[in-house]
Image 1: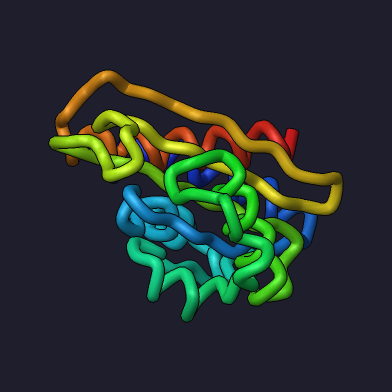
Image 2: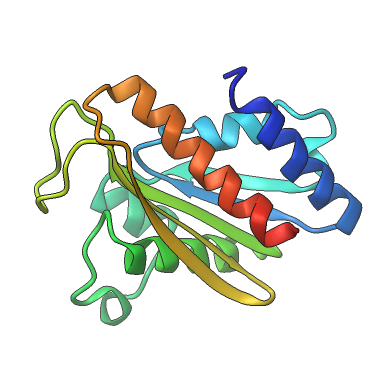
Length: 160
């Protein structure tokens, strides 16, 4: 967790200074993004909630993306990360939505993505952005931390 705290502090301080809020949807990061942001003193000023959306039933329950919007969109992709970021933002009525979806390992996923593949996205007041990270590693725990760091980096960039 210590490796994520400097990034989380930067993001948290920027959100607090701007009086903005964030909602999180994460999958393969397993709650590390939320945990890092909540470790920042004063997190209640900006952190409205987060969910580990690891399965389709979890996505249905927590994100409620309409079937027509998710048609043809597969998990572990930039389009899905964007939908998740948009919908967590809408469900929690936050300024920002931040999402992560991937394959931590030690093997890849059923879509053919290798272990170490993740897509992260931010949906906010100025639009949305997504990107893909591939670590090339099958180390599940290391990938989870790398995925959380990538999500926090993307959020920090959007706040800069």
